[in-house]
Amino acid sequence: MSDNSDWMSAAEAAKALGIHRATLYAYVSRGLIRSEALPGRRRERRYSRQDVERLRRRNGERHDPEKVGRTLQWGVPILESAITLIADGNLYYRGRDASGLARTASLESVAALIWSGSAESDVSDTPLHVISGAHSSAELPFISRAQSVLAVVAERDPLACDLRPRSVASTGWRILNLLTSVAAETAELDETVDQTLAASWAGGRARAAEMIRAALILSADDGLNVSAFTARCIASAGSNPYAVVIGGLAALEGTRHGGTAIRVNNLLEELRRTRDLRRALSDRLRRGEAVEGFGEELYPAGDPRAATLLAMLRERFGKSAELAFAESLAAAGQSLTGEKPTFDFSLAALCRVLRLPPGTPLTLLAIGRTIGWIGHAIEQYALDAMIRPRARYVGDAP
Image 1 (cartoon, rainbow, N blue to C red):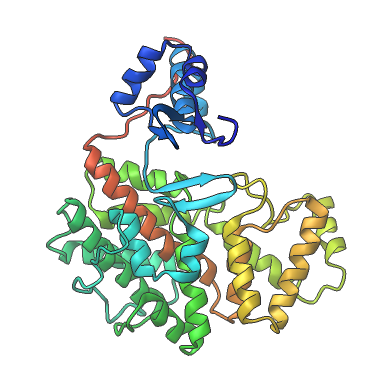
Image 2: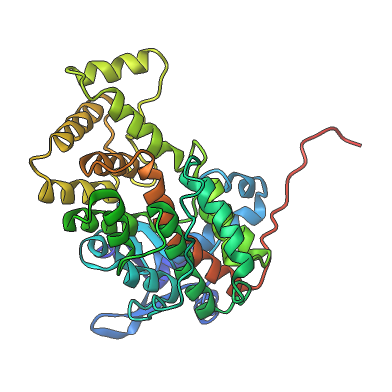
């Protein structure tokens, strides 16, 4: 089996789990471990290494309950999802490479893929919910405006509490259009979300719409992060999709989550006219300040979303002075920290190259991530079970 590290032989799988082959076959029949016939050898089968490892960890946790608590802080998987896979330094939505989708797919088809499993499913023709006064609270940041408008529209939407998969997908599309309306401060949407945002923020430039579309697709999901977990918890309580997105937005704007994109943008703004970028970053470290935008634990070899977005910027805006500066800063940061730019860095760079309004990195992340939250909600509604972890008591004894 050494020719494919994603699969194991029956002997290897049984040994890893400490079980007999009969038990292994029982796990396969119960759907706990995937298997497939070996190419050219129909009587022999191979077994998913990922599934075997998941079962091995779960069995270990039963004998060491303290390990379960550690799973809430970057530990082993605690929920099952068919939406997003992060493997070998790549990001996949339902088995399809997210970087490839960012270059070639429409936002509508990616939303359909995440929500239904098929890029051919179409719910984008559902009635739109837009607010003509979406700009009336323009002094508030996007997240606050979006949350307030979502709460109002939820009460007006007669289908808000229809939690069947296709209905939730239709509601998800109405929510996406609503958030676009709030972000663009208009009740008149163009043909697509990306075109509407480009028209409002960048004068409708085709290249700008293309980059915005790619950023939204790459923002859609990256596994069970804090906002996705929040969304699933809210969905597990039976709350409607509007509430799911309101909660996801609340988690996303936190300084340790989506708020990082704003700090990275501020870093680029502060250092824009600095000549010796490596020294400036080094001075920040000496002062005990963080150098945001470098190193992503999910992607030790480099964030593929950032690589894709920066490559697309080079292809379309190769002569941009803002892009040249961002790439110089990326090189300086990597030489100092040994870590590559994150997706937050590439979002900030994109917004500066396109000269988009302040706060746009977080707005793009929020609108794109809404697709993922709705996908997680659909999965959680189907489970019909409430997420209710137990706490390990460490206080005073009675």
